[in-house]
Length: 339
Image: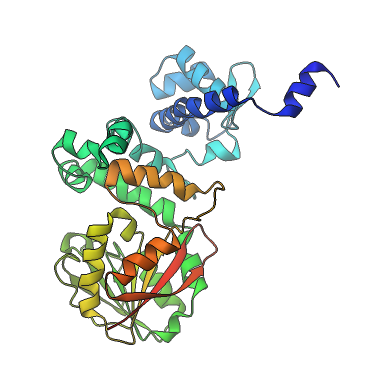
């Protein structure tokens, strides 16, 4: 074994590990830039010289080359000849209008789009135990999106692209036929609810959200739209209440308020189904531990462990009944009302 092979076999040094993590900021920036410029779309029909790519996206050819060359090292783009680039399966999802596209998610994370800016306040957030970007803006992320409707549209598109694999997985993971009436609380356009109803013709649904959101909902003959705020009142009687990726948007106090509002609506036989990350208590890698940093810095929410959900339920008039895994990154955390 050569000296080089011996070093490689030993793995990265602590210094290399730290540098590798730090360089991830640059890697993320390059992926976002590639999506913003439309580099993957420019080579959708096959390999092209970087000069042609740059001309199509109105950018500098040398700088485009350097970004694409760097991304090639992590499997995004490949050179078929010097300075001639083609897509890889990974770079294909940077295209805007393809199945499985992650373009909207990357656009949501771009500088000037709100969430990116919040990462610059990470140290201040950790020092103060609060979402520091809100102080800088003078308002929270939801007001930010209200003031930037173009970014709100991108955010919603991103959420749909991220959760697309989740929808059939949640439908398949549980016997929803047990619940004659299923309410989707803050269910957006009703993607999850409609998928469940289509799989269970004997069920009816209620889609609860703000009126302006319901105006864009998927039409369905077994869905009743009800508008309102889950901080004030949820005037819906159902056998199951789904909250998909909702509770993680809020800190414990606000999440508790939502669940207490819901508790006033639930009958003893009803169940609350929180579709969320479930963070392990052990030290292994888990993507939810990293999305939790975004929740901390940009949203003032948090991802939670089983113990966190038990505590949150217990303080809101529910008991954790079971945790149902799905064939996705998420679990269904089931709560039952208690006196």
